[in-house]
Amino acid sequence: MAAPRPAKSREEYNALVEYYRPQFATPYENVKFVRDLLVSRGRPRPGDVVLDIGGGAGVMSFWLAKAFPGARFVVRDFDPGVVEIGARLLAEHGATNVEIGVGNWLEVIPDDVGRFAGVVSTHALCCLPDARPAIRALTALRPEWILIESLFYDGPLDVLIHIRNHVTGNAEEDPDGHFNIFSLPLVRSVFRDEGYARVTTVPFEIGIDLPRPPDGRRGTYTAPLGTQPRAQFSGPVYLPWHAVVADRDAPPAP
Ligand SMILES: C[S@@+](CC[C@H](N)C(=O)[O-])C[C@H]1O[C@@H](n2cnc3c(N)ncnc32)[C@H](O)[C@@H]1O
Image 1 (tube, rainbow, N blue to C red):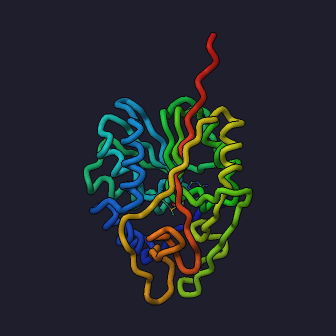
Image 2 (cartoon, rainbow, N blue to C red; image 1 turned 120 degrees about the vertical axis):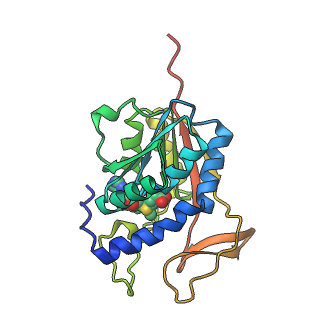
């Protein structure tokens, strides 16, 4: 069970506002990747409600809501401080079809079952220790589709990576201190067992060069790797970002 997040100091709060503010001003590359993938699939449709789980301050939903003005986005994150910042920035930017609130990914709320046409989650599954209960908590909601952007490996291995930051002194239990990579065959089998056999995987190939932070701190940068012109890294960690989209099986004919 995920522990509740500790309250933020005024300095942490202000630093996070400044971290998120530029993301509300310009869509970052992963936002464009997820948005374009959904546009290519014609989802969500007008009238659909979409859950954005582990949605942080709601940046992804903010941009998706602009791309899909007829849909409604419900952002949930278990960090009340980030949710407070998100509510403030969404209001400042006049977002109307996005709402944000506190919620734990792993707790299935009975009223949510059947409520969402789709579920989006970006850069959050990799913060959890195990993909299996996390995916089952989403399939339990019975959405038509689930899109998870996270770190995946096409082999029978999960690789759990935890960052200790010796500058900021991140606490051992900081959930954002993980870059966990989950096995695609495992993820596909969990989806299949839960009635989502149609699973598509799309690698996130970033279109711009990002420089390495000069002091070695955390932050995505790009470098060539094998046939990839711009593989993504943070510190010493290779980041195999993918979107996994699972579609619910058609119900059997009566
Ligand atoms: C790296 S941030 C990504 C935020 C956002 N999805 C984005 O793409 O900007 C990961 C988020 O997952 C949230 N998170 C981690 N575990 C969670 C859980 N069990 N339930 C809900 N949110 C969780 C964290 O609080 C954090 O805001």
